[in-house]
Image 1: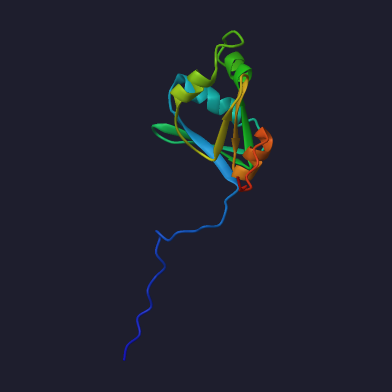
Image 2: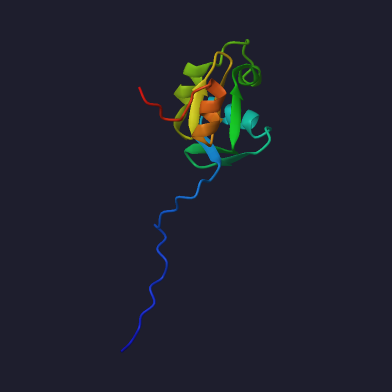
Length: 124
C-alpha cells in the first residue's frame, strides 16, 4: 500500500500570541507622514505597500497626535483621534484613545491594566 505525505497547509491556524499590534494607513499625504513619524519609534516596523502602509509594533505603540501635527507642518491639536481614524483603514490589538494620543496594545491584559479594568470574572 502506498503512503502519501501531505504538505503542510499554508492556511493553518496558530493560536500562539504574537505580542504584536498595529494598523493599516491609506497611502496618501497624511498616511505617509504618520508612517514616517511612527518608524522612528522603538519596536515599530513600517511596511509601505502600493495602496496602503502597514505599521506594526511589538507589545505597545503610542501615536502621539502633536508629533504628527508638527510633522505635517500644522499647529498642535490639528491631528487628533478623528484624523487618525480617517487615515487608518484597519487595526489589530487593543486600542485606547486618549486626548493626546492613541495607544495600541498587543495583549488585552496590558490594555485592561492600563485603564484599571479588572478582567477577573466576579459573582454578584
